[in-house]
Amino acid sequence: MFLNIPQYHVLAKFNTSAALFNFEELENIDILLLDVFLKDDNGIDICLKIKKKYPRIIILGISSQSERSIVLQMIKNGASGYLLKSAALDEFAYCIENALKGAVVFSKEVEILMHKTQFSDFKNIPRLTRREKELLALLIEGKSTQEISEILFLSFLTVQTHRRNLLSKFQVKNVAELVNYVHRNGLM
Image (cartoon, rainbow, N blue to C red):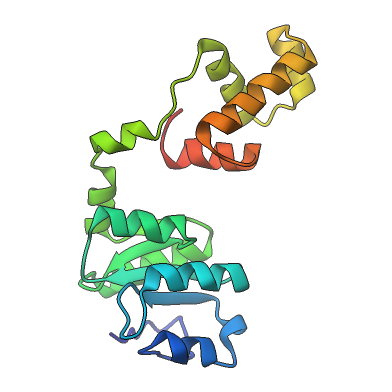
């Protein structure tokens, strides 16, 4: 597959992960369209390797398959989106443009797939107490621990405990990851 979108310059094409990792200008790539199934490796693992070494590179997974678990694995490994090879050229251009602006993007068919809720998705969403929901809403607004303690009339230590519990329940490392998780999954 070769894209010819006038506003973007194609630096190189690769058929194998070896060729990709041997490319001397890899760190200069702004956006990488990464096939999920390469001849010598899988794009899901390659995505993680690239993001660890070059976190600035925006990766969009591309494939002819729209399997939900593959899409989720790509996003989990750092991809900024997932497109089907059958997507129209204007879809590719739109997705590339928005990924460069920081959005997570999908081609139309993949977006429809991702919006279909599955029972297994609910297993990953923790149950929250009323107080945790209040606290989470304030964290999303950008309130500090001190501000939250004043708003909810709780001690600083109690708010810290609730914050720790939220991070633990959502299995995230910090409030930024928590807020991203909540937004990405449309939980509030």
